Amino acid sequence: MSQGNGSTTHAGASAREDRFQGHDYYNIDELLNDDHLLARDAVRDWVKQEVSPIIEDYANRAECPTHLFKGLADIGAFGPSLPAKYGCGGMDEIAYGIIMQELERGDSGIRSMASVQGSLVMYPIYRFGSEEQKMKYLPKLASGELIGCFGLTEPDHGSNPSGMITNIKDDGDAYILNGAKMWITNSPVADIAVVWAKNEEGRIKGLIVEKGMKGFSTPEIHGKWSLRASITGELVFEDVRVPKSNVLPEVEGLKGPLSCLSKARYGIAWGAIGAGMDCYDSALRYSQERIQFGKPIGQFQLTQKKLAEMITELTKAQLLAWRLGTLANVGKATPAQISMAKRNNVHMALEIAREARQIHGGMGITNEYPIMRHMMNLETVLTYEGTHDIHLLITGMDVTGLNAFK
Image 1 (spheres, rainbow, N blue to C red):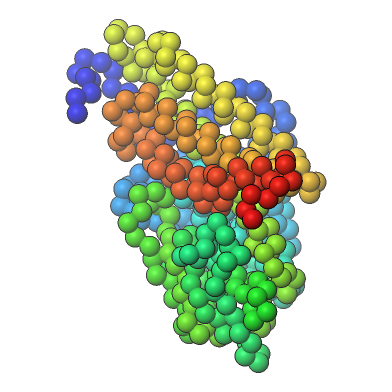
Image 2 (tube, rainbow, N blue to C red):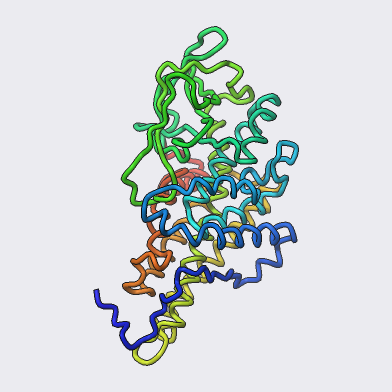
């Protein structure tokens, strides 16, 4: 493919250098406190130093940079809004969201590593676990000594988790666990799995399944074109004997896993902004440096239209996430509000990635720029933790009072 770069400025000459600058068109920083800004700057610096220089190579090889788990722990990315008593950050929900934003600015897979650990493993143990379980697991998860995963989705039950067939049967001081879970982030490297299964009465219970338990395996899923730097696998249970002391005592029913998903979806609503910002930042810079017909392509009306629409949508998403964060801080963010933000912001980021790819022209499909990697990642983010369409129906049910799922 000829790019016509012979006599024009080749804007990709130093593209591997992370020159990202934040974008805050509506001065939203003024709505943040010092802790929020310090957390953002610390995570942004870490991403520039530890993630950006290696992420294209890892994504290209479809390999997870598992050494980053320790770094994520060191910057407080695991359970940042959970209490300091358990080795966590003790920060508010806006700080948690900002950390997810900055991680996903680096890569959606890196944010997934952190949000699964914090929102889908640590949060249910904190919210529904016994004090003994909290003290046993949370400090080690916060420090990265233990890695966790979350088992809800099954091969035949994705958007309909209530149809799960993974089950437990009473066996004295333990339960016998059988079944399988699919599309599980971190599973092949996880030390523990928070697994949701039906008991003999058909009620959903949460269990902490530990690596090494007989009959428990975690085969890796290969062949992904998306989230290539994130490790994904299955959870397979063949007569796994799980002590009753590993059952989460404070919850029963679907509300347990769904509340965890709300926590994770909230983080995604912030995280997607980071991916969108990275694509916009790269497109803006490229438009100022790439010369065609004797002037920067950013001087052409159609390019300016793309960039103006990008920053408009980013700004709307930032305001949506910030308001959601203020509601979450006082316990007023509803699952339906979280669904709206997740759906809107991921779709926004994906559209920005597509427009940014056009601005970059042919260079946009190469790994000299982050655009295609973000675009492929966001295709998954659009689907996981509730698909784009499911979140639409959640909003529809909330505003009409009518259930389209039945």
